[in-house]
Length: 456
Image (cartoon, rainbow, N blue to C red; front, side, top):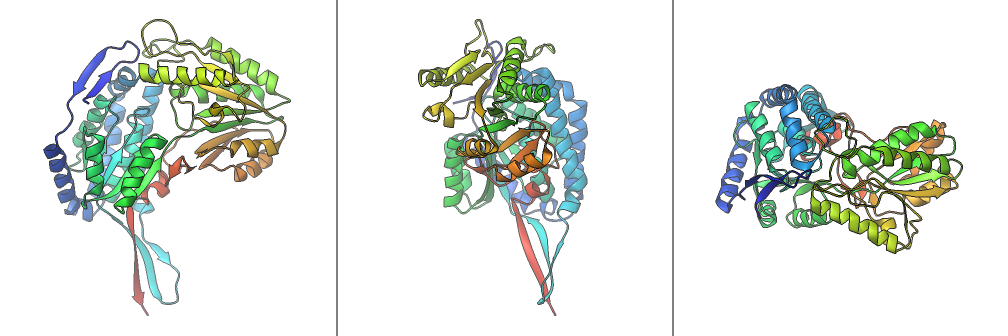
């Protein structure tokens, strides 16, 4: 199937790209592997970090053009699209400025002699990335891997080919040599063959649990190091002493960001019974008053979902949840007219015997559960196959810290919803994946941590 760019607000096909042939994929791999063997990857990091620095500056300069690609291609609201471009630039700048320190030799205490760890590239990395943050997802791989010296072959989601091309072109303009970062319009079979090739030594994927299990199994079979950032069903906890208005504002933003198509977006709202009525009433008011429409309109609060298929999937999921006993408090409807629009929705009465209790809702749908105690928080939060992140709102920070230590997730946010920053490691546990991206943890995932010892 060809890579096709479709505006989800209108259904109009914007552009179509042909898949790359096997010969084109082989040429890309050969070029990347040759670059890996060259001084550009093996020696002084300076030239590589200059590319990232220049990329960051170019991204800021082209902010409006790049943001427009995101809005037209996958429906991201223009304000959110601008934020994504800025974050993309910030991550590139972070690694340009900090990679030398992050990858500096580390002394190893031993009585056997003088020992240290030093960090080296491992080879070509294959990246498989999703559509929901088209630039941000790519720079999370490009930043650390270009800094360390791993060339990357990147397969982006088939619905965001224009973003994939724009990212590659920006890196090339920033000075990246041929082979450093190569966009490939590849099929699943071609990716499987790449992972099996001895010239590929690392794999990074952000995507669904299903895609992750397939790619991770292939990487494991071929003994390739991999990093998997998969789905999430994050809890958003509001305790009895929380600032309800603050929690409502944060919760609405966290659930509707990206039209709810965010892996670490708030999905399961655990609200203490003492504040549940007030919180749910105010959250419902936020949802019903949100302006839905053209994502290019800066006054719009919710744009379309990424595709008609994605909208139909979430609508079907809500219908099945209701048939199994859930109640729709607000929303639950497809917006009439063209475009992939779905109304912000709140589900209550989602019991544990309802399949929806365990599912990830990848759209503007919030599940609300009323809790009575801190024990309920831990029980419900951890009663999930996912473990990406979570948020806790309370006036008692020490209480929140104690709960945070018991929640089985890769991150916990206290009195704020989740966000991202170059210096903050990101990743999950359980079926949310393994490994970390961003910060020092991210740059040390796909590297050779070489121990050197000089005997006494």
